[in-house]
Image 1 (cartoon, rainbow, N blue to C red):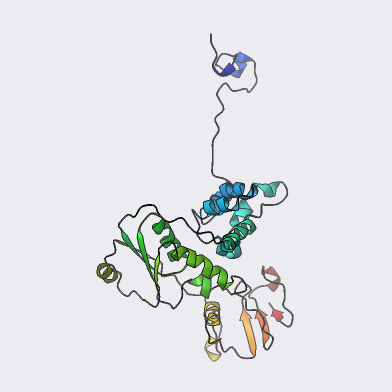
Image 2 (image 1 turned 90 degrees about the vertical axis):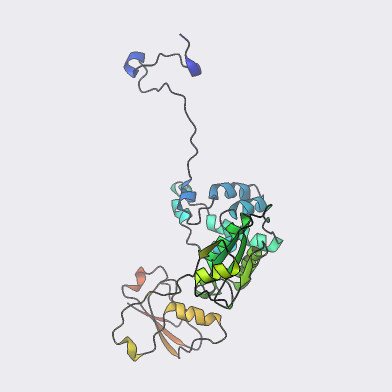
Length: 298
């Protein structure tokens, strides 16, 4: 009897073959999704572009990364990198610094002036994107790569959405953000600022769009109940950060109380006295390191 795959035993039970728990089937290689890729909210092929970065082929790594995410320099600064929490390497010593490599590739692309490859063919379809935040810009990028003509209508005076109005400049420098937005527009995307869409059907009909993607965002902060809150001026984190982006800075006064210990906690300025209040023990906050001159109360 001929035995396939160099197996010299007849098919049957381990008791009949006296082989213990050996199997008589051909092993099959299965390519499954790595845990880092599975944990990535942007769906990046992390394992793929990391392998190119490891060999020093940074442009190929960047191009593979940007097949899924057109804003690597931004994500490398603001992403909370759940990929590293899922990384298998952490079971040996520590997780791979995926977020740091992504930031490096994004910065290197800006430094070297790498551009996206324009689509080879045009589909003849026109798509309206409402909103120039991270969702709208990403949608415009992917639609343009498919060969569609894309126009973005943004109600505000500048693109970026919550990347610009919800993240401070010290965390996300505006020159980095502007460079990555400009690269998307250079792909052939048209950006119309100070255009507010009131009726999506009329906007599509008047301009002859075949489809629309709504990315209006939600510039709304979480609110906390504060007794007698109407007795004092209270502004939420989104209001403060948005006003800091404009020419007119918020008039907060000399003494400021910051309620909450999350990432939007205000930093003390030299001419103000700041007190931070946390609804629980302030030591439980991941941002509990005090700044010089600030007072903390739980």
